Image 1: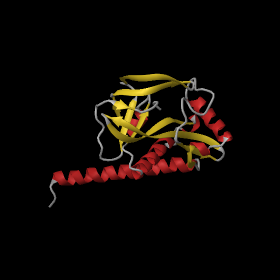
Image 2: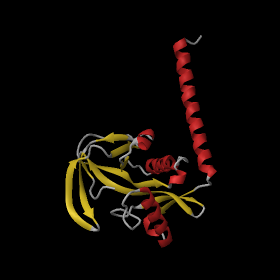
Image 3: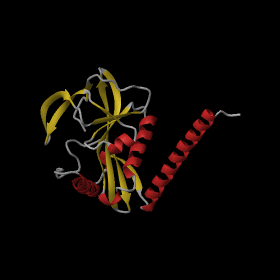
Image 4: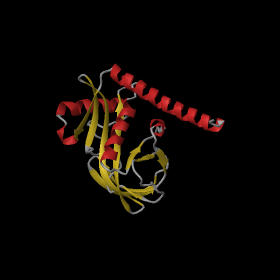
Length: 210
């Protein structure tokens, strides 16, 4: 006969599995409500008309965004989210080697993830993050790294806030300004995709931050 403790553990595990299943079903319902299409595309393949739509979405989402489809530098590729001909979400991605405490580390850097205001209840951002996680695991990427002022979405999706001393190249309006080296305490979030552990050592981004 099962002990009460074992029975309670089994009930807890079953409830967790049920909660996860219900969450996935709710997300799928939200996604299919709009019949959304998710497109992964290399930056060099994006046509002028689409760049214009990306720029409009970015300027709707971020204050004082420049008059172009990127902030400081173009990403390697993007995920675009379409509702018919309407662009309702985008996420740029940098694939890069950085050094973490002197050790070369492969990352995906998330760039300007944003969703149109009318679609922010559809769990699109979570779906984009999960797509990137799947690709990262398949591609043997060590971490997803991003910079954000609002951490809530990312903490819910398994990211952690870190405060490493960082070094990166500074650029502004297509001009190199120099190299910065300081601790960033309030904006870096990381998520491991494999066995590698994120340490507290210095991070060299080997380029600009995204």
